Image (cartoon, rainbow, N blue to C red; front, side):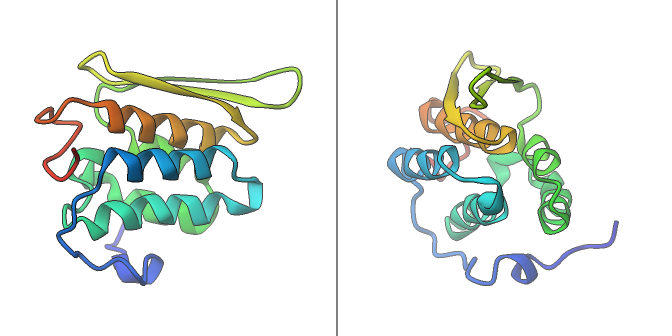
Length: 149
């Protein structure tokens, strides 16, 4: 796979050095959880933009997979994009309930985990759960990164 310029998919992603707070991650998780099928690409780009704007090119989200995440997002393979964001060693599950809602759950090696109970699409359930898990991750753990609280 040849390198994909970040700016091609995230035109507003400019490292600002700002700190990404737990509140930022939780707010985006809520938007992901309530996103419909047509909004998946936008929410994935929002997540990547949030991390890129912090000046830490997804170090806590497996930066070696960023190229793959961008390609998957561009192609509409949203579940694959979210799975590529999962940190090494993450445990995740997902299920569709009888009413059509989706449950996503993510746990990291440090024992920190979170879930999404009201998503309409699996990719957004996993992304919301991942963002919530990262917001709860203790400072200084590899999955957390230095830019997060």
